Image (cartoon, rainbow over all chains, first blue to last red; front, side, top):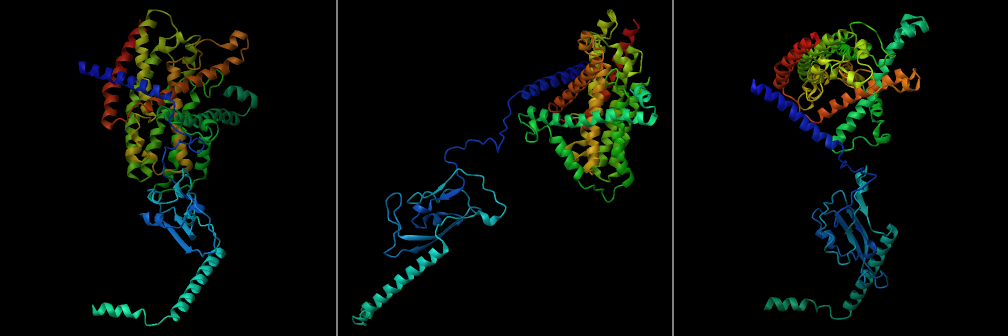
Length: 191
Length: 355
């Protein structure tokens, strides 16, 4: 009987204790953030969408090699002596036309390993994180700013220069004795 | 209300239908408001915000959900017993809707002035059990059947303490009519039945603690009858998917939901009539003070809705306070605790009212 009354009392008392707690929480300010209207302030050094400042890029391919998931694809064409490529932000002369700089952000794992090797600090993480797309192909970001025509022009220029060089070499090689390159090999063999 | 409309129109059927529209509107509006309130209360008790994007603080959310529900495809499970399956939601809704026929919202707004009001109410609300069992059985689904069986066991069990408390109130007031019970508790909150009724004397003060016990028992057992947390094992989400209406979708599911919210308000209304003075104002009427007697019924309607909503709020409050009971705990609470206390309470109230 004593246990029975105790159970009754416990039942009522504990429910009231619980109700007091929930009633307090009814007036606690909500922790919800109304996301699209209000955004959380991002911490320092967040890693989000990659951005490439292509004007500063020297086409060294280091970021591409650092990438663990191979999401960066770079193609370059050598410049010909007459081209003016400008200089980078830290005063170096550019030597390569960057004809293709694609980042497949769908593959990117946001490790930031590509950012550190860059000599001109032109690839970096921004704090943009809302870039969902309906088409996966839209996630392939193209940063190169040369048009297709320009690219083919640069290629032709380079090939021309190469051809001229070859021609010069051939012309230079035709004048001296043609046997000269073969001689050292023979020497090696005899030793 | 019916007599007034009958005199106005002169046609029994049209007057009856018009009277029936009033509680239907009240149920629908209450369901819209109640679901929104439930969401907001539950959200704020968990330090969230709840719906915020449809209208001011998301008050249109229920209407948006209703629109979605109406557009849904009406699927009937292949192996379901189709006729029973289709009747069940209607029957459940009818049960909770019919209960509103005898509930006096104010002295002028009363569907039917039957003398056996509370008796009729207890009887008609049992129809819900039949509907729930039909829904569970006809769905041909193990979760539905388990839920329906649990619901039936629970509702039938908890009707006993409810009936015992109602009986003690009938002994005290000497009437079965809900309107007369409300009229007895007039003029001030001190005259409410929870404070021992309108008759001033020694018995009034002796009754007060037992009235509180009775009100508590009534509240707990009606909470179980409408299958609300902590007594929600018939529709325990984590165990039985959705209980007896697992297989339902679209508007049929909506009717179960509507019936649930209708029942919530109905039992709150019954408790407020039995213990909290029904539509009577706790502090007197503004209409009587300024001499505009036409204002009084509206004020009574306001007080009635306010009392009902307060009790509904307590139901929601308990929902986010207590975890669900096990089946054996549920039966223990009913048969070992509520019924003996209700019985003892009945006897004591009987002896005091003889004094």
